[in-house]
Image 1 (cartoon, rainbow, N blue to C red):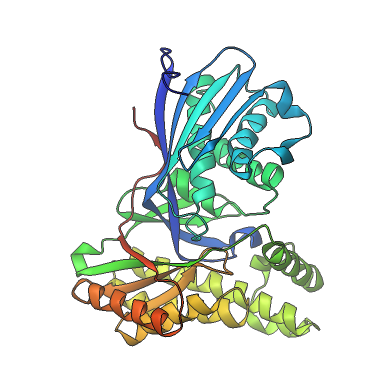
Image 2: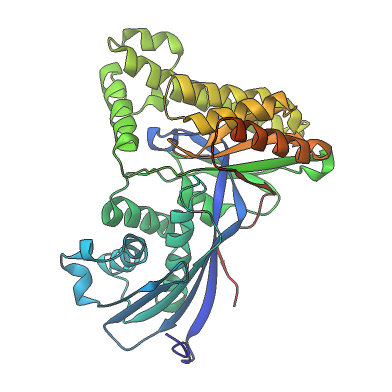
Length: 375
């Protein structure tokens, strides 16, 4: 593809990955989430090409260059294409399906989000492509529709039944803030999250245990939540008024799933209220840790690497720690004093070495800006 971006209508767009401060598996239950955008993300270089042609390249998979026609996107045979290509092609197809003409486009993608780390590399990819197509072909498409297009690409064309958390975070987050989002109403608020002011850091431990949302476990959790809501006679578990109600669930598994969602929504509301009131973020540490215990015990989506990282960080003095993302692997966050960050990272590495786990990748994050054009 060298020299292929020579036409006048060319640009570069960036969409970030995310970590969720609190609020896992609440989005598809119509609940509340509290993510922040990462400085890591996907850059999409895009150019308008001759009508009817689509060319794709990923710098992370340079041997998998894809060339298709717009007509191909309405046909079967996607299984023959590399999986990563389903995301941008799904976005293109969804633009077309909604009546936004994409005459032809060439995309080059470059991601800095670790794959399989639970940091929404897929949403960063889809959203970067979606805002590029919007600016090149359909500038009147609002952010809410971009979020829906990106989610539909993942749900329908990739086959992962995610909620709307990841795409909303990638599109709506702002620097220095966490995003409080009511998934049902789509109302949101930017809440300041100034770690520097309190000499704190938010560490991310990429455990090297990749999570796989396409293996059926994620879909199973979603189905269990829907079954619990139906048995309780409500549209979504968000509508359950209190923990006493879940005693009516005969299946103990469904009781545990419902208990996680109900208590996790309460944790989101509590953390949002603390931060909204200007509290020292150290106060939310125990709430983060309680969220991990719930994900581990009630929702059963943790993994040995995640539990090891959480336990080691807490022993090293973290105020709170928990797994992030869909689970079954991925990453852990820990809220620590800046002065203790290096020691905490070392403690987690040592704990992994003792259990013969791969050495985790560790980095500190501050809330970054959402998706945008950069050139």
